[in-house]
Image 1 (cartoon, one colour):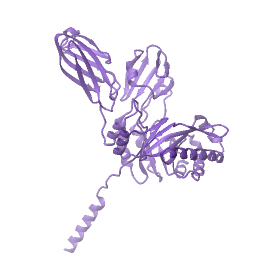
Image 2: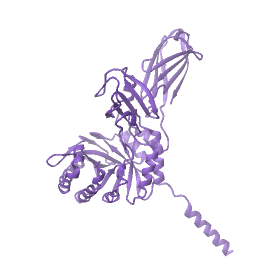
Image 3: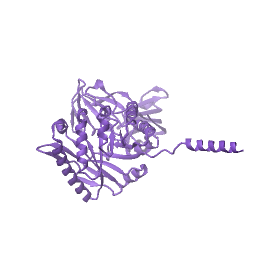
Image 4: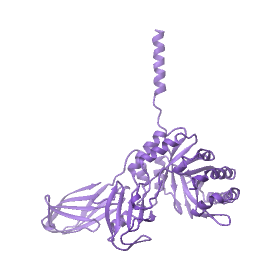
Length: 452
């Protein structure tokens, strides 16, 4: 009997030891890159649902003069007390080039004084400053000098100190010594290269690269977060396929509505190529005939996959995720907070389409996307199919195409019993319109919507 009892105890002990542990929550934060740091009450509610209470705000950039000069990048702070703020500082391109030759002691002294004064100013505005983060993209060969800089400046700044790091630093023999000088480091698992030619296109990030870097980082014995991207961008190439500029201020809605641009093709999910058929202006940039615009939309599906990978490595040293970047109002090329909240639950937000129409002889039709998620930018990605009677004329206005059919055969509007409206894009909370003219007694019988 004692033997059976002991065996039972052993089994219970083994079961209790092998019982899966409850998964720990990811610690979350956002990089905030704007000259006004403004977190609205509605945003605060969403951040609280994410259990996110930290923002990493781009507070300044150091340029080289007689001494390092701090260029302040935020002119107004509107941050609730519940949000903890880390001030992020980076170098101008000139400072990066000169960094190897700048004397460390002088650099530390001037930078520490500038940062300390700015922290005091920002705290007087009611902001809860808890840390400083250095976002210095210095050459890999200078990591030991960067380590010395961090070691020296720690004694001047009485707050949390962290750094962002680049993917190619991780393989450096100086990397582990570098990151021991800070409270935590944040490898940015995106934006590894910006293609200089259109023939060299690659996505901002991808699942395989993220997994490969997570495996390398897991061997380190220092605390870290990982940076994941939630943005997209537009790359402008000339007629020969050479990079002209990278833009984040162009809207897919603006591109699809421009008569001077044609949508050529989709290379892969979330990447689309336009070409200019005549000279035009888009936003603040002049586009010449023959130039190309490559749009990479932010990818909520990739974010879901990336978060799943990160959770697989979550442990003693990997603490969580910082998202680049915090969305601003009316930004089409950054995932909304609602989309990120859904992604944290393993879901990909989709457009929510609703048709409304009014009128009799002339019917005004509106397709509204009530979601905070935009549609896919691709030919025919949005379709509205209508069963109609007595149609005379279609003005497709915001739609790219209006195709009339009699059953399955193409027809004129007057013979059609079926009308298909197609659009290449619908933005978040955007409405597309069309007008339909009918003969007396004509009407819309039924409607169906589809989105890719």
